[in-house]
Image 1 (cartoon, rainbow, N blue to C red):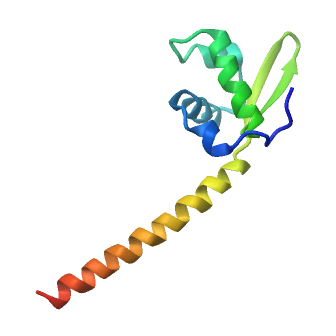
Image 2: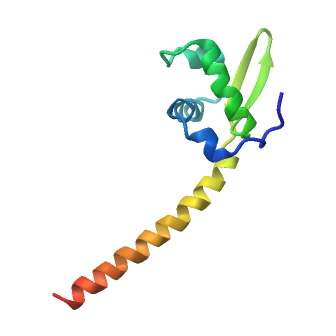
Length: 107
């Protein structure tokens, strides 16, 4: 098992299947691999590989309960994505204000 946080968060969320896994875990307190697999047209081993990548990025936590593994969302690493996006939100807000000022000046 790898240490949480060893994989880049951006790499982990780049795949649409992994983003959907995160969405499912956000909607539920925890889900088993079987419960997660039922939402996809891919095999259980494929879902497990995606979960391993998310776990490496620290985005999910795994707990063994009896014979099954249950997964929970750990959204904290997504703050890095939020910070990155915040910069671009400010960038575009400045560009739109400049456009608005320009249009008002030439109207």
